[in-house]
Amino acid sequence: MPLIVTPGQLTQRAELYHQLASLMSAGVGMIPALEMICRRPPSHSFRKPLSQLIAKITQGATVTESMLSLGRWLPSFDLALIQAAEQSGRLPESFRLLANYYNERAQLVRSLMSQVAYPIVLLHFALLVFPTPMLTRLVWNGEIMPFLQQKFEVFVPLYAVVFMIALASQGRHGEAWRSKIERITSLIWILGRARRELALARLSAALEALISAGVSILDSWPLAAEASGSPALRRAVQSWKPRLQSGETPGEMLVRGSDFPELFSNLYNTGEISGQLDDSLRRLHHYYQEESSRRLRAFIRWFSLLIYLGIAGTIGYMVISFWTRYYGNLLQGF
Image (tube, rainbow, N blue to C red; front, side, top):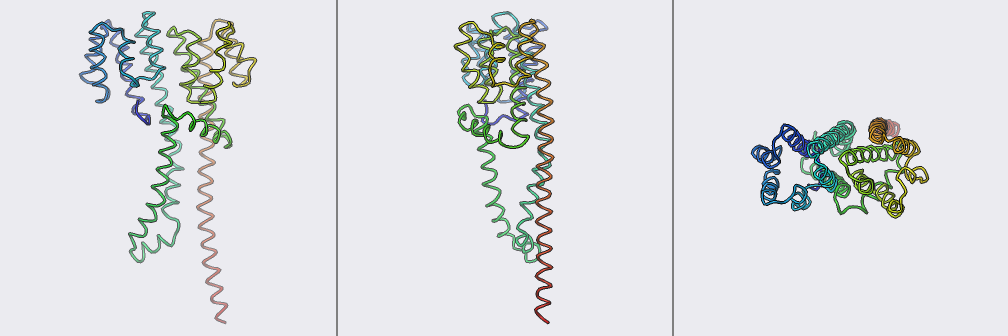
């Protein structure tokens, strides 16, 4: 997996699984399907791992064994789902579930990026304009190098910090960083709840996909918690292991615990008791995804407004200061 996952990379992975699902549903075998995709893969970077897959399966290895030999090219979530599907003979359905899962993730990331585009542009505009004396000297005196140097000193550290945060949030070895980011964002109005609801939406989607593919509850919950991207949820689910092994159900632990919202706990427990867990998880996924999107839009509106007010206030202060100095000089002349 790449260091930082982009919407395009998620879409490419979804396309790979979609093609596998379509070809196998049409009766094409695994090896011929992989050979067809390998000739024109969704991404050039897929050609080498697909060739290795074909070689391994041709040698007699199972699909799961072949994919495990690729190391970290596939997430553990994908491997668990494919392994369960291979054992139950539902590989096409499993690939289709993965295609839908990665398409939804890509759409969600694109939606978030489009929502934050305006405040980011506004912030860049503010950093380019201020301090205004630098801009004034650029326009009137042609002092290009001092202006570029000042902007370089501002933008390079800013981009470096953003890149490191993104890397720490997505990297497999950034658990401590992800925990810190989660704690910090939980203190920010609206943003903390939006991030929490987004994690619950991803957990619900992953859990539904795993259970539908035939993965056991004992294995599904830890994998879904990891796919949620929330260290807090992952730690909470890890603490369940002894009680799960002793015979308790996740629904019982959810109702008695306080790590998950009451709505999530009640709806999951109801689905578990009624035998309609897949429907409950689907409802939870849609609910929390809509709620997280709504809160993120509200946060971005307020963030944009704060930046706008900051720019307007700074301009107003500079105008008042200019005229105050101007009239002060006039009064001193009399």
